[in-house]
Image (cartoon, rainbow, N blue to C red; front, side):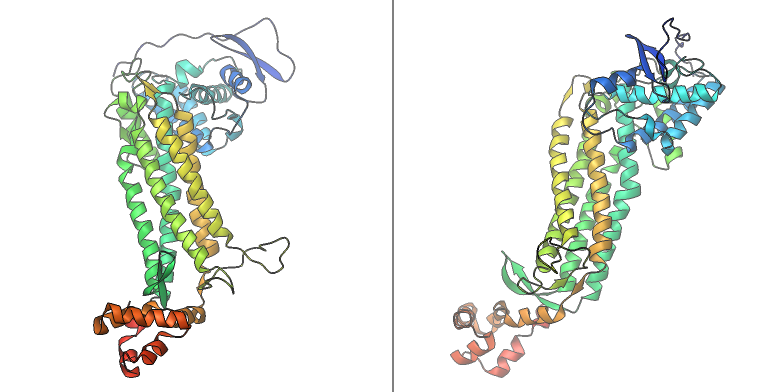
Length: 477
């Protein structure tokens, strides 16, 4: 493989020495003083001053960048674009970034340039200076490792940032979210099995309906999560397609032929996920359909979780003046004024974070539509919202499972009493006496506040033996 000729770089020097505790570095706009105790350089320092507000760039993205820069250095070396000793130093420093050892070196915020250039340069500068230090050089000298010419070799911010986004999201999905949802689904199935024979009253339109088992209700919750997982997994093949190799506008200018494919293969080996080179780099830089689709699937999950948590919150309402069918673990005091009150805090936490994910989705879908010509310039926003949603959903599922579902128990006496009071058991009479006569029994029971059995006998519609034979809740599920 032939490698485009490298640009020579000389060590920076300046006659004006910086103040104590600072060192002087340069970029294309001139010299900048940076903290001597840190590895970042001039471009990072400029961004710190220009964008000092909002959340920091997610560390998951930074760690993914470390993996990417290591893979790029390895491929550059194999293609003759980097000397072996330079590549080894870059790989070692990049792996420190990937492992989180250098997290303090990444102070930049989400709300910066829309391509993420400043974060890419933050990574380049930190890796370069850490490699220089390891090789016995002077921090800030850009020799023997230059952040652009060596660490960023064959790359652009425009293809590295979306590649790091895909890496970070895929890793979080496979290692955190999918296992967390699977474990929650399994906990729901355990409850479904435990209460498979416990008959309770169903509800539609928030009104009494015919019976079902509590196990069937929880089995429905588990099936919702199974469908949400299927939606998420369906997006993974596109998410595994990487933009690397497209460089600035998708043409691959300055990268050797086959660079993107080789880096994707190396990342697949490093991370253990089936990453491949995106078949069309113009799409990969200018459109973010895979990320939009993935987050759309996360919103499906958020909707399922909201429904499940809200149902459980209502079913546990009371304990004496609500539905009271479920007893939730008592995790913390619920009121600063009402002694003994305990609230369904895990349910409330899960419903709130589900709404946040839905809000994140609105921003992501709008941001993904902003691919003007050859570049989408809303990448940091997409990365931030994607990774926040993954963190919220993963942590929320784990907490809800551990602190709510696993310790949840049914109040069997309360459930039995509500079944006995229900008017909708009258549905079992319809095949025998018809809809209208059954309806009259239900209305009579409701108006006179008596049981269905009493109403049926008072009206002389059927005998006690017939009622007992036809109205059996356990046979209605």
